Length: 403
Image (cartoon, rainbow, N blue to C red; front, top):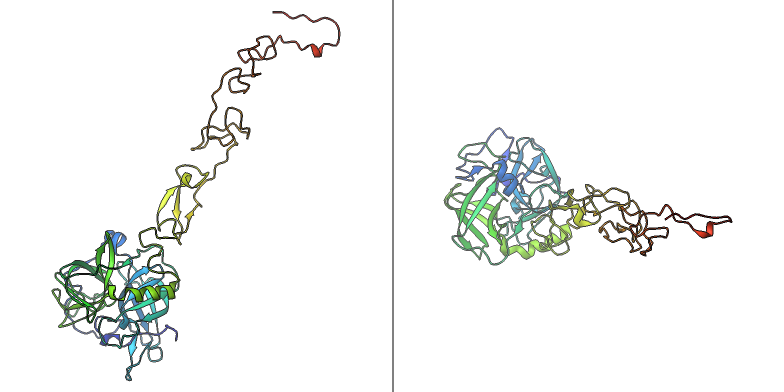
């Protein structure tokens, strides 16, 4: 079934938030004690946290949050894109609520600048519609997004109680407010690790609320921000101190890896844009090098890593031509020819320093016949002898050689 129509019942699940409607549900605070993302934080830390928005046929819509874990893959909560019908069947709600699910980015989603649409979604096979650890989904986008951050997925060792983290989302910020669509973040703490339900309880000083569903809990692993949790639900309102629950991602890393291969054609260890040069990659997205290190190109120009991390884009590199008489930045000389045994080598990389009598004509020599005879055609200072007489030119008569 196509994914062009999704999610009109997600509000019964926990933390998605209805948009565009005249009525609103009163709720308690927020990514509580969080703060609106600045441009600096957006560029350096959070640009890959996106809004997952479903536009419904009745003029309303819903918003969740998601995280780019590959240029065309978003990790989010299962309840953001799937529904359980009255018979308990889990499926897209494509008949009842015609709409479009799309991915948006920015500090504020108020203008709904479309970034990408969703072409396929997968959910964990054991999810039954209840809010529990299997509340996890992956979305395949219609294109690669190459100008936003890509995040790693937490691997063992797993998280521990007391570990610090960061929550990010586009949800509302307080009781009765209608201020979703702005990205906010907050510092938080892992309060409990439930290995049975595969949940992480977080809080102190920040928690999550409606609209933050599907958003990440980041922890630091190998000096990089990694997705440790996916915001799923809350209990007893939206408390900043406790009762915000995230799907424990490390428990489902193998599943995520399998679905990554199924959807994107590569695994979690080889992702262009994740901040490290993985096996099979030449460079990492946005890396630059001097063109001269890539071949016979002018020094000083920069080549940027290609979108697939397999090579550098040479479009900004100027190829150098040895033998055109112009000394380029990485040439030692250029005498305008391809003769290798004169003063300048034929690769323009070396200047041969010789002496008169070595048989090689080098500036400022006029000649060099390889001997020290001062009275032949080339004198022993390598100047042409104006008085030299070649007897083979004598056709009779006398010649006077003046010395």
